Image (cartoon, rainbow, N blue to C red; front, side):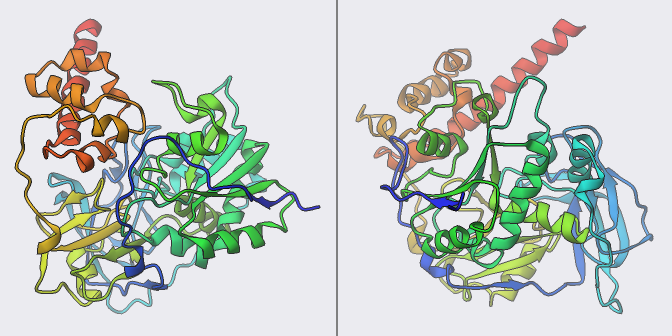
Length: 454
């Protein structure tokens, strides 16, 4: 009897949430293509949550594809590698997709290089858990679902805690995006291998692969290929609902448990990893290839050729758009990521970074400016919030600048999914006000900590 199974009951889910139109059909049948190399690359040193990397190269220095060009500057930091054979043209300030200017490295490609990567596999049996964590950090691997949290930090299980379950996030609940779907369809062996590599050090009891029901091919392929493993893996179809891919919602749907306020999934013995990240871990150990490229979706009703591409990190976004045929005359707005949590881009002269899950090009009839009206106390935002917060009350507190009072309403638990703003009939930018409030509260906490230290 196989230890691998596919959940046969009704699709599981969480309470509340929303059902935006999916738009997956624009790109979910588009096979992953390799993005051709371009002339120039831009590599910000802060492509992850935590401390920026520290540059190891100087202007004029030759670098090889996969060569480490920046070291981690602390535990919550990762290495950075060159995506191409080329020459460093600048070590200084660069524009970033977040709209700010940060330290970075620019590289011009060597036009005469074949760009072959030549490294050896990394033997996991030759290292202990500490060595495994260090290897992930030096490979530059971060969460590829969009947050870009350093993977080695998540995999470093603190003393007194245990990873009972490995849970892979293959939900990809954001409308339009299909990169994770294609990754599961085209690289299922690497995903299973990544699970086994992680479990080699984590010694978990079981793994789950959570996939929304609108990805039947991925569910079927992973279920079939996983059947050869001696480690128990369960492929769990989940209901198509937003934000099903949020780790707290996924845990609730599968295990029936809620992550307590202020706690992490690991407090329930669960480690959540994106399927793209799992593939990257497998690729590093089996080929020695660090994270220098990622799979992303370029889609929308106003892009000429919606695609899923394997793109070198640092590629200017305008080059990616051009490779997909450019935008149509109807193009009105370009977002980094999906429509729910994505950020509008003011320029395409910024690079694809490790956390770039997609580029979304919307047409003019899909973009409208909302007039903001007073809250009518309809309660739709409360019914939509997956964490059972009170967005209407928090929005009013934010409007009045009552930041400390927002803490009493658990503002820091909000992960800014945007469900409240999506359903608000008054056009109130709730999630934007929460983002501002959380920034102010974090800054205040840092000031108070600094004052107490001094």
